[in-house]
Length: 368
Ligand SMILES: *Cc1c(COP(=O)(O)O)cnc(C)c1O
Image (spheres, rainbow, N blue to C red):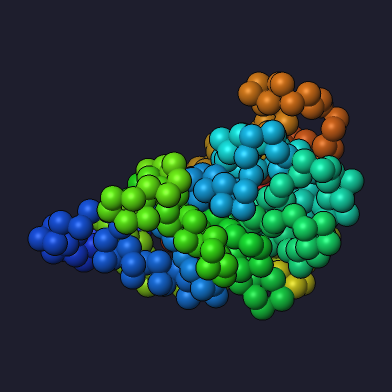
């Protein structure tokens, strides 16, 4: 049996509805920031419970422009995590700031208890990641941010639909960045990102920054960027939106089956599941666990047709690009353990019960 990691070939097997809407839109010729984007932004705002949602060029741009909008610039520090996709740190560096890492805890999200020790007079934002679609302890982090008067920017790129205590992720911080890259559960046919905020001033700053700093056709109020969302992609996004709820529901159901199978008496001593906060609604962008014999298990899974992955084998503070920040191996034990021991199983909406059982059996065979 084959268990594919990607869901895209299944999802776009019959793209006719989307293609006919795109063909229709060509008559209007509104290619960037068009009418379909306005509809997409409205849907996104509703889904995240935010007053504003603003489409931009990518998830990385969503984070970068969010950091710019809260005032991060050259010489500043931004508190973030070493266990994320490179784009989180990339956005910080692109804004001219220095990433100050704080280790994760057993949830694989930033350890809120370690944040205050990392704050300095130069700290201009806290940028936690809702890793794998599992919300970080956002209320506690927000309290720390407010106490110190530091803006909270959420990296929600993996977490559309996730919640903390019944409130949507992306609506806690001053601003949040999302990605609609094809690997994310709500995606388009290329790059795109969305920024959400309840703050009118930040929303208008971002609307200006994404479009060259133009306040109207002829007037530039500040030097900005070209980070617009293509209207054609918004058409795709609007169609994919229709399946979002069912996608999330299925991923949560599948993850529960896997969690239960891996928590049995026999497997518990081999497999460590991330801790899952009871206040959190996890949307399982990734389904991960940790094992000591990770590389051997990965090989075993791949040989048996299961397209497991590692997210990610090198933590951000040990990347060659991070050399000048002066971090060393041993600085962030939890993130380093994740890079050495964690494995990601396919857990998406196009799998069925047989795939799940096959993955459970294949993992069990390895240990038992
Ligand atoms: C995908 C992702 C990003 C960046 O998104 P792009 O759309 O690829 O630029 C940022 N942070 C995290 C945690 C991500 O998973």
